Amino acid sequence: MGLILSEKDKRLSFVLFMFYSSFMMMEPNDSPSPAAALAPNPGQMTEKTDVLSGAAAVARGVARLFSRHDIMVLSEVSLPNRRRADLMGVDAKGQIVIVEIKVARADLLGDDKWTEYLDFCDRFYWAVPGELDASPLERPDFLPERAGLIIADAYDAEMVRSAATNALSPARRKAETMRLARRSMQRLSAVNGWIDPQAREFY
Image (cartoon, rainbow, N blue to C red; front, side):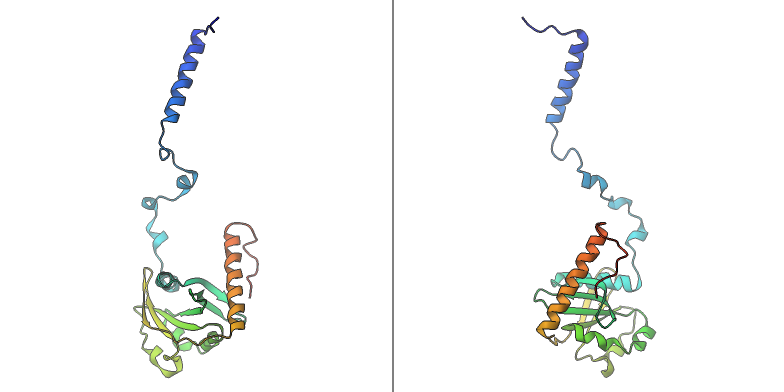
């Protein structure tokens, strides 16, 4: 004996059938993923969000240049001697690179402690914006035979002078590499909300 449906049940069954059919015919890309839904629309970005100036602009340009040469960097890295490197990173060979950024002539000429960075890197670079007169960096007291020079803006950078390699001892390089790796993981954990973002960073 067949099942007898009322008119109301028939209408409900038809609606469910049409919904199921349309769902099964959807392409995978018809519905945006949660990540895509949350991603910002580039067309909605205000000009302010993509405008950098000063040291931040130089830092981004240097990071882009280095990334093409397989050098990954981290900003504002405290060293064991209580100095703070503007950029510090590691290349594909495991060598440590430090970059000191200067955007003002007075700051450049007034830094008489920059050589304290040299004990913690294999290669050292100055990075300055194009509008800053970099001629003082040719003076002997700025060790042009040792320090490299990069001209950068917010979009890219150019290596004007390569840095000489002065190899760290294996023990020092291992210690600095581990400290840099732990610092990177600590910052990522803070960004992900796993730890207190105000926690003191590793020295």
